[in-house]
Image (cartoon, rainbow, N blue to C red; front, side, top):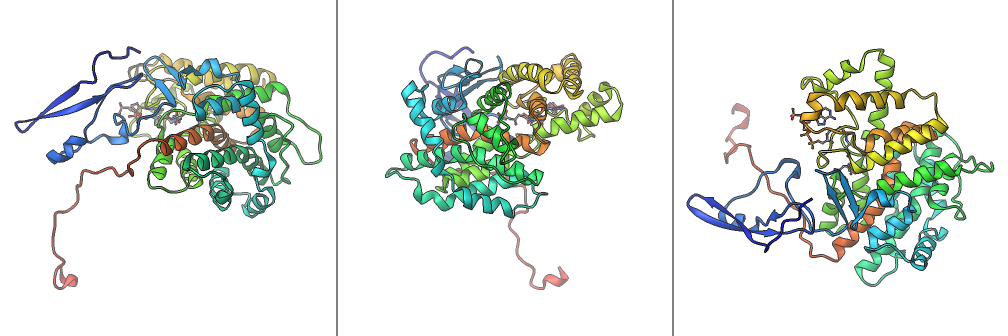
Length: 433
Ligand code: SDX
């Protein structure tokens, strides 16, 4: 990434004989951006479907170098953090630097404080959820339910209150996820074991039948920790942008996270990890060659997409997918060597990366292509894949909400290109109109 040098400067737009100067905002890394605020005065707007070229905020948390396929959390390449503990990385995203050992110890103690999660009330809430309910809906509702405890989040200033709410959220996510899994499986809900580390506790909440002494094995817990780290943040993706939009109106933190969870659920976004497994199962059961599915993915008349492929920002291999691919190869070999889906995924990746359609459009595997295979090898049902994405991404959502409390904030309100009817009057006798 070449960081453009030189003064801020400006871009000049010539419109109907008028020269409009648009000052340039220069980032630490990435594309300079034109400040287009002046366009309103010229009765002009910009049209940018999906905001692909719109910098809506200034942020210092994460940078994605899509051209080169790099991801940085507060400047650190994510592959250097992949084996750090998830809570250490959460601290980095939230506070801006890696914690000292004492800071890490204090932060872990705060997040792992059992008093933060009203277990009995949350358990009653999950008891109400039908087994047929998708766990993402459960997580969204349970997160919103934390609003009932917002007054307990101490802190005089907004930043301290959000920090307390964020720590409560991180504390609650393994419990929510474990309870959702229990509802899905029709099993009794466990209890958090705060003597375990975050990933181990998440696994035991999901898999340990209360009363049994089963504990997750270390390799699985380490693999899950790496997945949580790699999912922790990713700039202004659809769900994080949703969170910031909710924050911009002054609504509550838990409401913003609940909205972000629902945005992440979509199959084009975080729901892709579940859609990838569904696609691989369809390929396996169809008995058809991979070329059949590649042709479907290229056919604009066919809604079929190669799920887990392509990305709005990465135009090369997703930095996270490289790490997750290796975790998948190691863990599946150990836990589910007989599972055919990994081999199908590896073959699909090979043929797609050699296919002109995908090469020309720079469509590579993204974070979701291999993650579902790992969750499946660990034993999670497909519906639990996106909730596990939520657990990791909660760290980034806390960091983004905190950043918004400390930077100037305008309520998000995009304009539109109106294509409806011009002004007209209601006919005197509508019936005969
Ligand atoms: C995540 O933004 C983030 O950071 C998100 C995320 C995060 O950490 O928060 O990284 C997590 O959401 C990863 C993405 C998971 N989604 C999927 O795997 C679903 C499949 N991918 C596609 O839906 C798509 O690639 C998107 C949504 C990810 C990106 O869509 P864009 O940026 O709007 O790109 P596009 O749809 O304009 O595609 C460009 C071209 C089009 O063809 P042409 O019109 O040029 O002929 O590529 C084609 C698309 O049809 N294309 C695909 C494809 N993805 C894009 N064709 C077949 N299969 C695909 N997967």
